[in-house]
Length: 90
Image (cartoon, rainbow, N blue to C red; front, side, top):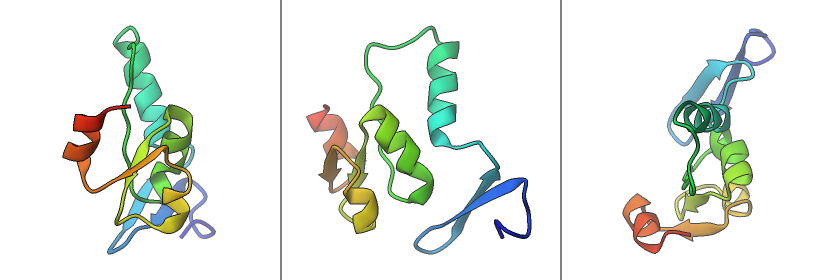
């Protein structure tokens, strides 16, 4: 899809594909929301697939134990679920 449609980015996920406009990803959205809200002292992010990689890297995010090993290698923490990450925090 990425080679056929230059205006989109497609990321393979476990059971589906995530498709977004080219150059738009979750990291960009988190940054936009933070600027719109006037900034935050702390931003916690968690993701589990290829389209989360930039967000995980840029915000020191976490991932899930069910995520691909390549995603786990980039995360600051690997947790069972979102609730565990929120309990532990950074």
